[in-house]
Image 1 (cartoon, rainbow, N blue to C red):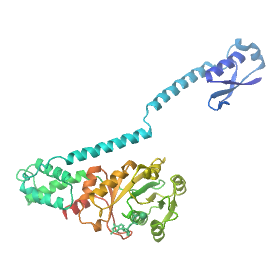
Image 2: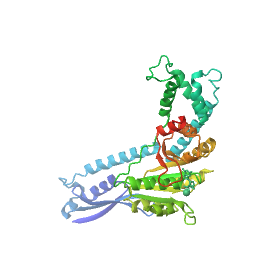
Image 3: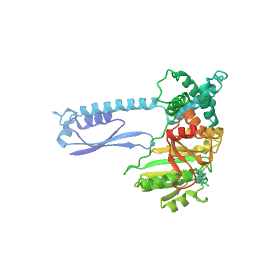
Length: 393
Ligand SMILES: Nc1nc2c(ncn2[C@@H]2O[C@H](COP(=O)(O)OP(=O)(O)O)[C@@H](O)[C@H]2O)c(=O)[nH]1
Ligand SMILES: [Mg+2]
């Protein structure tokens, strides 16, 4: 038997060479791809064998033992498939293109909101007297005019108190209030409840301005999941200066008896996730500060690119004014915000901002921090709690 190695640019070419030299009785022993000296060109290396007798017969040997035409057919189909995949890949938008598209949509949304705000005050001088108490209450709570008028417009569209099907003993004021509440309920989105699952790590990252209560809220969430839901929780501080800073989260972790690690670079997260795969919940705290440029968002954007999902939660303190909070949401929006956490509800007396931001940005609400005490001062966000606070129920 004689064995020989053939090199060609395609399988078909290699088979032709084998056929020519060894005839149709040749047997292919192995194939492999190889990069030749120039470093860019791929060739196929095929090892083929033929018995001495058949070699002598050369290309005229018959009958063939191995039908090489099947391989040729396969090779041509693979070539076709490769070309088709190439075309599909060429047509697919790249990640930067998708990000650009997202940014464009965000800008469009902002423009629309500003345009709506310019609309004339439709209710000046013509607001039904019965609407006044709802209008005053919601205005006092800081609901923006745009959303206020949308609520009042809705009330105009419903059957009047006299015609509407009301509950027994309900007054006109209560009738309107219940319709306003139903309308507002639909506008508030709630982030799905976090459910730790054995054998699966969920990762949640919290960011926002400094001092808004990120570390404190994370500690509360961690303690609640560890104590009430018996979940294994890992706390991570992600800060490029973390080793120099006195990290508040590490103190909370020590007190609560929860595992804690610090990372400086985004590439460290893979190892952490792998090492702590027994943890159902991984909560990441970040350095505070509202980004002033896209470069400052890089540490968060790099985490977003990881091969595992990370839910991004923006923490906003209700002690800040509406414009500041709006600016913060806008600045962080390229990161892809999954939910808003509102903190310091105990120090605020207007709650309209919660409704304004939820409506304007269509973002779900996840948690409310209602005081500095860890772990007690934490609530799961709910529509009911927003409405209760707005109407002082
Ligand atoms: N009153 C009140 N204080 C809070 C609340 N959340 C956090 N704090 C306090 O705000 C300060 C800053 O909190 P911290 O979690 O360190 O903020 P971070 O810089 O965003 O991580 C601390 O003194 C906390 O005790 C809250 O909901 N209500
Ligand atoms: Mg902190």
